[in-house]
Length: 140
Image 1: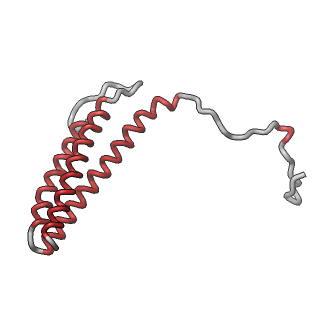
Image 2: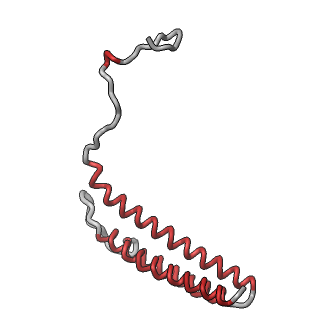
Image 3: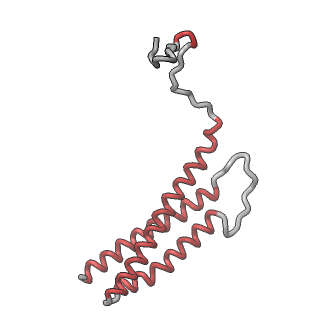
């Protein structure tokens, strides 16, 4: 494979990783600081959204460095292993980014559950419902 294409692949991967890393850490902080009514105060620890997001991003970067090194190597097997590693890290961070948006949206939607939503079901008065003939199945 041409070396220019490999360097382009590595550059695109690094740009995507930087963007996802910054976005994930920002979303983890938003989720951690989001006020939720009728909930006990949260205990801040490694399982909190902000530190666990930082750990996930750090582990993704730890896997990225050997993946980039293997992609640059001249052997085919090393290239394939590096490419699979990079694609796995990209998928992991992409799914984590989407999941963080979903969690934030569900947290924002919790306060709106109490609001009464208007029903769009059409109702008929009882005397206007057509009666069916139980033998023929046709309406009268």
